[in-house]
Length: 256
Image (cartoon, rainbow, N blue to C red; front, side, top):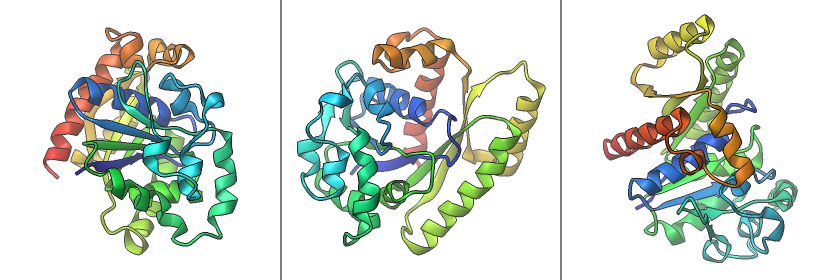
């Protein structure tokens, strides 16, 4: 049965989409069957997987409002090798439409039942806000992966996110837990980042992944080519870090 994980952080620009796309590609390279769900109306995970969001006729929007099932909406990443439930700007309208639908926070969870045996991993790229879309992602998931930069403001946002996850766990999804924190865009030359990293390890212990993703220009360049970084330049430090992270994820999930 598929294990479902959402990659979430209420702060924008912390590498959620980069983490989703590269983790999906790295897990596929490790022989895992992977579905990546793009829940962000910007559609960056869709484009970063090599899929033209402007030419799509069926997206996650059609799934959430009940127009189509998941099998009709998913497409394959040409270079990444994993499947994608894509998104484009149509998804912004789902926020309003979901309010009046039954089981509005469980629409995605209900849809995933049909494909739970098709994949080992389902990764959900959430938008940077606590919206109805993010709530659908949290309600559908077994756990949350939190990518974060080791900066002061990131620590402030982390406490808010942890409180949100606790509330969803208590009221909507008893299976939800924090799987781990992933340090991204890490620069060992900056003393503050080393201090924040040490604080995270001290406070969260083994919830902090051992893998650390460095700040890497090749990861930043990859989306403009419609490729995951681990495919665009497998030898880069960023790509190797995500491969290490994927292996750690496989071990951590096996131990759950």
